Length: 224
Image (cartoon, rainbow, N blue to C red; front, top):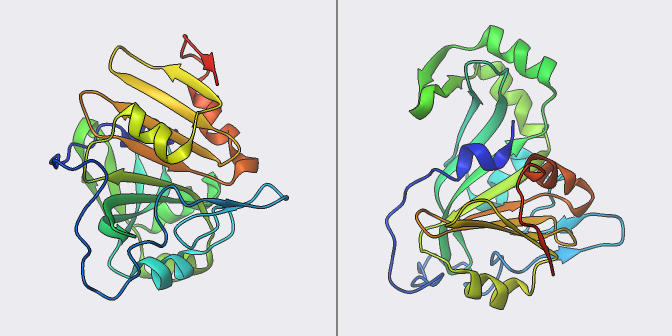
């Protein structure tokens, strides 16, 4: 499953102040775990939001970000699908966002889970959300996260992204209004969309081809 294809179409309500929201007052430090605070190591790993893509498990994600999330198989009609966890709203420092977490589950294991699944619900564009059996949900607690996709509740523009993350290593123009800003050293793809919501996709830097490979057909690449 290609992360960008499923997530770019989310439509959210835009707010006026770019990338800034009032502090929630829940005791969390508003200056920690912000989307641009990415730590990298010398082994191709990274840490963002207090999590390590490719290492942190679903149980650890719940401990850091909260237990109020949905877990299901998301699949198009011609695909086995992938196991994803979804936060409808999560506080990332002083930024509020939706988050989609792709778990590192092999296709044959996903297929087996589908056989045990309870029901399937159709989503937009014929995509289906398949409810997992409770036994599989319990087993997924120890499964690591493959990728994190964040959709802020406010609109971003390219200048704001560059200010926060620096100049991208590569810029891919997907359409007249949509551009991918690629940061392989961070394991990050930022999709800036002039007509929709922005999307930030995180993997471990060593796994950056997971984000880059689906974009090879896009022309107009500009190196930073």
